[in-house]
Every structure is written in structure tokens, then in C-alpha cells.
Length: 178
Image (tube, rainbow, N blue to C red):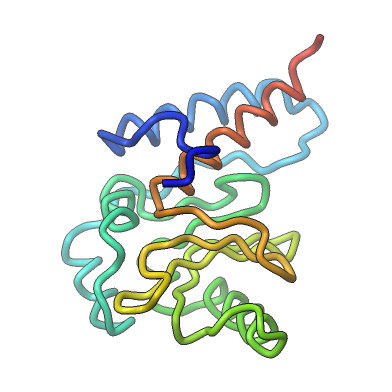
């Protein structure tokens, strides 16, 4: 596990999502210049939705990511302009199209092999793309942050979520008067 990101663990996704939302509410209260969009997570995904999505993408969803989706079925503007994909995004649509275009460019530059990863989050106002290693690959379950090159790597979706929580805490500290 990536120790520089692992500050606490996710024993309960409801608590983790609520904790993150509380941080986002504080950021929103201090974001007087409206730097970022502040949205609630999508409604929890159902087992049926996830089963349909898994059939469409041809593989099981990573267990950590799947557990998150059972609490928050995706999250627009999760961190800055980064949106975490919900089941409908994973199955196709504008966010996945944008992610596939970005992935194609990254593959052309030998940064990542697109067939070994599944996009799970993308920024609308930047080149940030987050992918997770597909089942049966060397990077299975690993979340990789890409932005023209590899920015960071997380041991799993939980580690990624916790790291983003720490980034949100830093944003809050930056917006807090000294």
C-alpha cells in the first residue's frame, strides 16, 4: 500500500463519502471566488445496475471501486473538475468518449496500454485521467493518475479516494485565512 497516501482506511464507504462531503462543504463555504463546482455524489448504484455495467464492459468492476459505487454511484466534480464515473459512464457516453480519446493519445505516446486499464475518472477542465488496472493484468486494481504522463499511482481505489481526501483537505487549508 502506498504509505504516503494511506492516512486512514475505508472500513465503511458511507462514512468515507460523508467525511469527504463534509470537507467539500467547508471548501464551498470558503470558495468565495467560485473556483470549483461543488456537487453531491450520485445516488447509490444498485446491484442490478452494476451487473449490467459489468456485462457491458466485459469484466467485473474492481471490488473496492464497486463498493464505492454501491454508496455513491459516481461523483461529478468530485475534486476540482474531476468526475468519478458511475455505471452509465463506464458503459459509454460523453465522459467515456473523452477518456478513450485521452487514453488513445497516451497509448500512442507509450505511456499506457489502453487494453490493460479502465477509465474511472476524468477532469473536464484539464488533461487529468484516472484509470484502474483491468482484471488479469499486471496493474490489476491499481489506480493510475495520468496527465500527459503518469502523475501518481495508487495501490487501489481506496488508496486513490484517501489521497483525494488529503488533496481536498489541502485545498481547504489553502482557502482558510491564516
